[in-house]
Image (cartoon, rainbow, N blue to C red; front, side):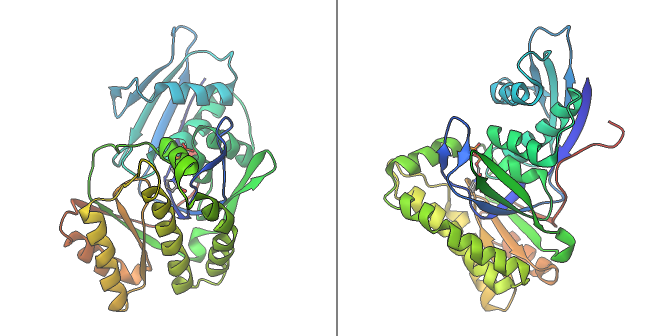
Length: 320
Ligand code: 2P0
């Protein structure tokens, strides 16, 4: 009746933005991500017949705001007739600030919830369930380089290259630690309804996915850098052109981009990507880590820098 799981966030190199079915939370486009190693969410789920309703703590503090989404996820994982659940979550990085905390949270919740309910599910089935709660969470079920594709009425997710085959690093530059102003789900919907660029984004995504897959297969860093930066800037352009506009960047976000450009001009293998928040993720090869860290740390407005390699998919915690 109790299980604990751990999951890491993932960073999309080819982004998911927009839904083809809001009810089932199916993405409009495929995506490719890398699962991180050092940042994590740990979730403990305990089904308890004596509890009247679900409860949640986040880093030890009771939280009501996130609870309805977590309860709905557990209903799908364990069935609506399940007992009430006590959910305890802890996270070693800022929540809801564009660092994919929902991805690691729902991936860990799905794995822990299924185990606590005694359900043995394949990883693909767990990914589908996690994806119903949060699209990007489906990718955190897998490690290394992960592709999420649309497949009929469902999604299909899997590792396309192991982390050890191409051990990239990610330096995350934190430019703001508060929660974001607009949630991804809402921003995506505004983009879909109002952005003049949305239709061409959806139409061109397969080409970007092909280019990224090929670059990953060939460990072609400049190739992956070019397509990932292009795809990221395209996603933000859609939002900038929506009504009302969604601008997740701040001045330090832009300065980090300039820092990455300067590093590239100096011959460092590095590229940037930015998600639904103001943080900048700089992806680099191991040799470049100290240069990238130092340059981002020295960038005005950067409050912290965290470096991580690539890691594994969500899993039950040993002994839990
Ligand atoms: C991604 N993002 O591919 C993209 C890039 C943010 C920017 O997936 O509505 O929390 O819960 O399915 O997964 C963040 O959105 O959205 C996201 P929902 P989610 O990583």
